[in-house]
Amino acid sequence: MRLDSPYQGYLYAYPHKTAYRRLDPRPLLRDVWATEPQDSLFGYVHLPFCEMRCGFCNLFTRANPPDEQVTAYLAQLRHQAAAIRDGLGPSASFSRLAIGGGTPTYLTAPELEELFTIVAGVFGSGPVPLSVETSPATATPDRLAVLAAHGTTRVSIGVQSFLDAEARAAGRPQRLAEVTAALAAIRDARIPVLNVDLIYGIDGQTAGTWQHSLDEALRWRPEELYLYPLYVRPLTGLGRRAHARADWDRQRLDLYRQAVDVLTGAGYVRHSMRQFRRSDAPVPDGPDYCCQDDGMVGLGCGARSYTTTLHYSFDYAVAVPEVRAVLTDYLSRPPDDFRYAEFGFHLDEVEQRRRWLLKSLLRAEGVDAAAYRQRFGTDHTGDFPQLTELVDRGWLDESRTVLTPAGLDHSDAVGPWLVSGEVRAAMGAYVPR
Image 1: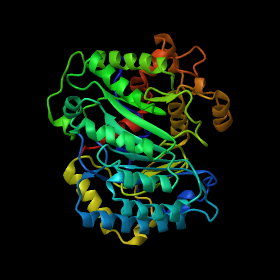
Image 2: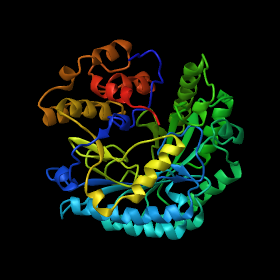
Image 3: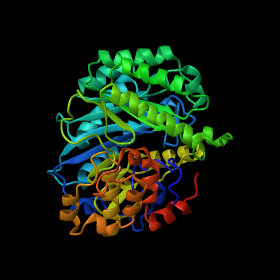
């Protein structure tokens, strides 16, 4: 794996779902979770529906499904939720929840009420940090009122650009008036944390237009901002267009560094390559929001679950016909099917160490060397001698525990570079569909 390009890929989960394979025999959830700590679990709920399919999106989602499919999906979630609860221990408790997709607020306000009833049945209804994703078209006052009434503490909205022409260039047709109304509605709902997603590297984007989006986002004083480089992936809307630009890496890196200067100057702290939090924002009540911790229990067709030794989910697809086929399969399953793990990846101790390293090294706080040693009985510096190459490049502090600012800039090269040969081979053998 090369380190010369700063944009190899976003390592938001390790191993990636394309490394998962059908589990044969399928293990019972009760056996999968039997020896796992269950006193502080993370619940994740997946809604695979959106009002549109953005040109850059490779998530498992369907745009504008028929109403009867949404109704059927909520009914099937009830069956899966009951099976999950039965697979966990009687004292299992959750300390964090997240609802993502897709776009959860594609659901109407009454459907969201039904969803929260389902969520409470499997994850409990106690006051825990709860993050929900939304979009400019669906962040309406009636939906947000439901989120607020059920204790939502964080809302994340994908704005991407405050210029309509740029949003269209990224394959996301939207109107600025819609974006502004959505942000105002979120603030009026008094949900404690607003996160705004922005994208850089869009065709036609300049330092001036990027500055405009940063300035407009800052006017809302969001507690968090996530900055995403544009990637053009197979089977997406943008992936079907020619997109070769010789200077694209340099353009994205320049825009990113511009944003780092702007946001840190405005009082935001960089917690990873993508995450910036306002220094005076409320301190998270419990662990920071993260979608890939061990002890994550997924509910829904595209949700992953993570134990120490097994990551599992249902089948994965990106292309529209294949997504529909997987969704149809999920909706047709008898309730008993949800008692088993279907597709997954077994992590031996070597992969567990690598996952620990990747999850922590790509965060600004870096590797907790003492915690690593306590968990595995070895030092991460000995287990991963290749880290010296990052030190030589100036991307890793001499301690080999914390990325330098330049290293954080290159997280999308460092992450893929550290993927194991086994996982890379499994991902390479996956046929995109």
